[in-house]
Length: 188
Image (spheres, rainbow, N blue to C red):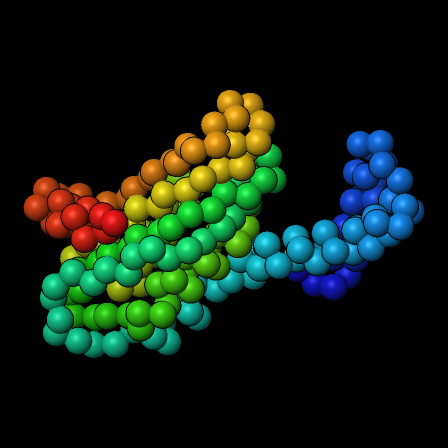
């Protein structure tokens, strides 16, 4: 989001404050429209993300052919239905097929894909699909476990609910043993 786009949010946020019965000129709220606009600028940095740039510069030829797992990757995103956060852990695995990716790129991929309006199901599939597309591995497995403030604060109001989603591609989908190995490795 560009600075001028962020500035366009400020009057909208002031109108929101008025709409809920607040005075945006009240001492504690005077800077709130600016602060909220800057927060949303940060929360939505994923819209300018280029996965090709991130992944293509960090792929290396390597004969390693065992499972690579990066687990417990913290992430947060905004639910596109209520604009409320959901947050949790991502667990990502792949089995190389002659190519590996720099390990730090996997958490970065999770981070950048989550920094836009999302649903957990789509986010899970996007992580798996982009790794499959760029690495062309034997398979990819992704599991996200998250808590959703939209479930915790409104509607059903279940404070301890966790949503689990998975995307299994290639050998993770086709081979039960591979899938089970991944699931065992990410257990806490």
